[in-house]
Image 1 (cartoon, rainbow, N blue to C red):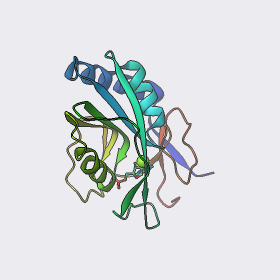
Image 2 (spheres, rainbow, N blue to C red; image 1 turned 120 degrees about the vertical axis):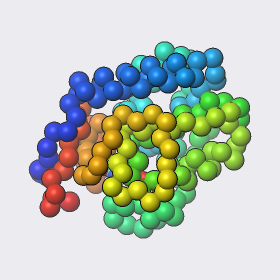
Image 3 (spheres, protein in one colour; image 1 turned 60 degrees about the vertical axis):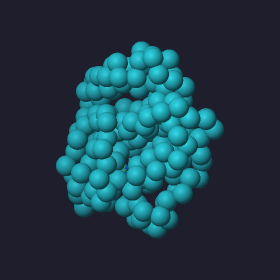
Image 4 (spheres, rainbow, N blue to C red; image 1 turned 135 degrees about the vertical axis):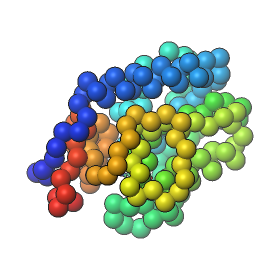
Length: 175
Ligand code: IMP
Ligand code: MG
């Protein structure tokens, strides 16, 4: 078992997600809203966010594959699952678990932009700046984090810990 330290409690996460949903609801009221969740990490965050949104919306998902190994994405990214929704003219909200280097979100924004959506907003539960390589403007951020590898609430380490209700930092030296 990896040693880990509690970072964000269930209650704190819940309050942030509710606040994000209320801001998004206000900003996108009257638009045709599509939430696009990035699998797998965003599945729990998106489920909560979607239920707290106060405006009608549809949901869809992408899954990205990045070549290269290790815990940093190499930047060579493809869709391993694309969305099935026509997003032309619609208000797209990309729902990501965590922005790290910025490679995944930059790829996804570029691909979705080609399909002429009305707008694209980025909603990330965690904005982690330490390893950022691309400039990313996240419109809605749950928590800003300087450093550390985190798990829980959808986030995994080697497919483990996704279903913990809280978010933990894995202690250095354990990775
Ligand atoms: P990026 O392309 O480097 O921004 O990669 C972001 C992806 O890397 C996230 O969607 C996560 O799947 C994964 N990731 C980055 N940092 C962490 C972390 O601290 N915990 C779990 N997954 C992470
Ligand atoms: Mg991810």
